[in-house]
Image 1 (cartoon, rainbow, N blue to C red):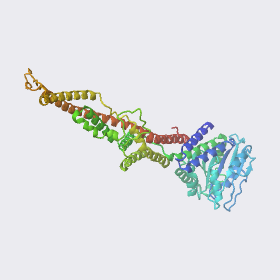
Image 2: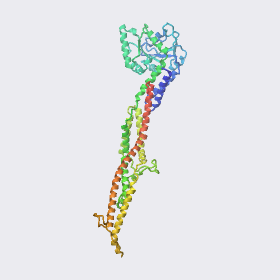
Image 3: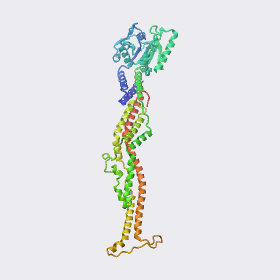
Length: 544
């Protein structure tokens, strides 16, 4: 893997750690930071050397194996266990290795003069290689396991050394091999001490070990049967290690595997799914109910009918409507867009949200948050529900402002003055007719000559013979009442239309509040979760 690619993986891991802060378990983020720090430290050290660590349980023969590979007695071996208490390094080409070994905290070092391996022509190969014999991880001394665990996270190549008696030990598989299953490219397994098995048993034990490794997640790891005592398989193991050193890719492959392992761990935080349109609509409906949208819309219709009745009703009785409270004014709402009214300052006169309305808003917001958090881990879901809780605190005032700034469209209609003019004309005709009828009675009382009351003539209808003032009186009254009824019918129909329009406008304002107060903060959190998931995917080597 190229340095640029490793840089990309590490960059993606850094992005994921930054995006996941406060949302992903701190242990996982700390592990990601450790991987990034360790990678930076390793890349600053010798890129020429390949570091190979031998890991195994007590008695697996790691030290004997190192001696066999080195061709001389480098590590101390003994029947008394454990023998290795501190890591020991055999170093080929020591130039530049000192700082690397300091970083590995390996102070016991052996500089090797004998070449590690020869090429196909038998010529010695100049390899930059470090083999480390490690303490037993199942040692009774706790510090031995601590050293083995630390170096398992630092070496470039992991060689698991097992013996026929303990190759199935759950400790090595559960605590060491399985957690590093993503490191197959820089992992080898050695079945040591095969000289203790009958010839027919070797393949059987090797097959059993391969099966256990497959269960650990290492499907393609090479398993070498070896005996440090009689030299069986030593040359094959030496060639394998030499290939790692020649290719000089193990360090980068190890770093790549480290990043991918922690990326796989971070993927447990999940990725957000899509929020259904139905969920958004349900949120808007719930908030519209909590904002009393239907109540205000009905008030618009009621106010329109009341004011229309005052203007276009029969003047003799319509003035009584002035004593009835206007539904909109009672709510401190304007009939239309009032340029002198600041909705950020003025509030409606609607009562505060009742417990039922708050519950309705709460259910709507929490249901939306549940839908938005689907597929996400606990940290992201908690952040989304925290945004929902913040929204619920501000929603009462935000919804009230939304209602206050809505142009309710309850203004007067063009036909009001027209109908009012006809009403007043009919009333004047009726009054003139009535007064005219009274003149023959009142004038003689005051000593004046009574006028002659003219009659309707020549119409050839039932009106012929009716006093014209009486016709004017009755006609004016009937026309006024009829116009009042017509006006009431028209105002009822128009009021219903204004109610529907006001409801639509109010719902648009409520939808805007839902977007700004609930949807946008939650969507910003979901976008952060998507960016986190994309960064984790890139860190794992899967483009998203």
